[in-house]
Length: 307
Image 1 (cartoon, rainbow, N blue to C red):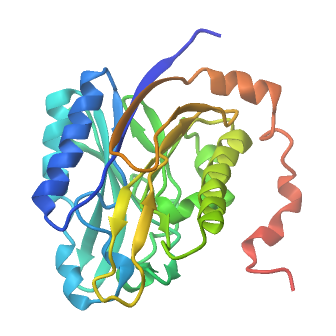
Image 2 (tube, helix red, strand yellow; image 1 turned 90 degrees about the vertical axis):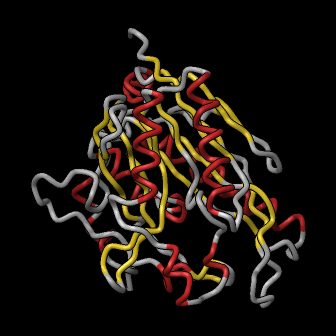
């Protein structure tokens, strides 16, 4: 088949309590990727601030912003200037008392192509996201709302983006539903790491599991996967935990799970890589997993547990 090359970029960065510093780092990374020819650039989860979910405080809701708002205005102007499709992330204030962890897609002309509200929300020591984020709305089949409800790919000039966020990356159901809706790529803006007091061996097992599950989504669905994760140590302001050491390890995988590009664990990096979107067609012909699905036998998947 004729190649269909899409040059993608992702930005791996450390974040700061000073929004201006974080924004400057994000923008520098985006500009560096665009300068290398990237047509689609993705930033990591909640890239304008520290990962504030390490503890619960109602004061931190002041970090939330509307859509449209400061982040979409800035990202839209940057996308338009550089002529790229740009994926960003923000803490969304939808209404008083109603907040989301939201990824946004800005088109080449600076307009908002769509948004995705994180569907799976964790609640673990150091990751108290249920306090801050309402899960995204399940898809209702409402016409005219692509990219705003549930697991719906966002149509852009570079293809249909199956945009998911962080904790979503552990769920094969989310990746599958994006694939079944025609996504050309799976994208995961992320903020994940480990407890620095855990044994080194355990931290490495967790990091490798995180990489493996996402490569498996690429294989199971015959789609490229793009992952951007933050780096650095961020202390718990309350001192109740040892803080979080973020993994970095951002990567791009092809439709057979093969690594196309990988970042390290410690440094800010910008990855730019060519993805041949036509390979998904070939891989799905060789491995027709979608054809062989027994959709008549999967009804119990909508149950919490088969008891």
